[in-house]
Image (cartoon, rainbow, N blue to C red; front, side, top):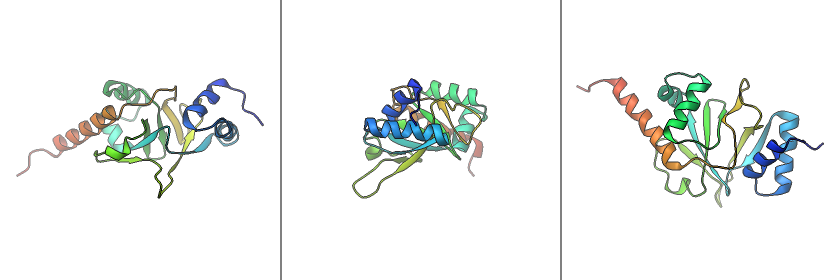
Amino acid sequence: MMFPLQQDHAAARLLTASREAAQAAADEWYRRGVALFLVGPAWEAVKLPASLVHGVAAGRHRGWVRAMMYCFGVTGPVARVGGNYVVLVPPGTAAGWDAAVECVTTTEREAHYIGLPSPRTCEGSRAHWIIPPDGVLSPASAVRALVTAAADINRDDEGPQS
């Protein structure tokens, strides 16, 4: 069965490497609400623990989280998947990634897959978009700045060391 919504097909093309894979993803979204994607070569993924994101956003309200992401310049796709926020970043990010959270990509030795929701799923379920995919990826520098801010907040919360 073909999934008719153009928004889903456009998002699937961003997330996949071929027209056939995009159609398969759109079909999976229709049947299950989540589709499995190979990470790379079109994008890589930074996994931010929800506790880190909620600490910087001063709460878990979806609107606060989205506003905080935009304040840091994280304007590309961000999905809440289980206990993580998954930020899609440009290819090549993982090679130079030095922040304290995981950045995944597919290599010659290991393939990484991530289940991502339909672009229409923006609330309520276990997997949903905070910022739906629209063709633009988040700059790695913006994600790194968010991670640094979280570390600074945690350091401040610990108080002076004696």
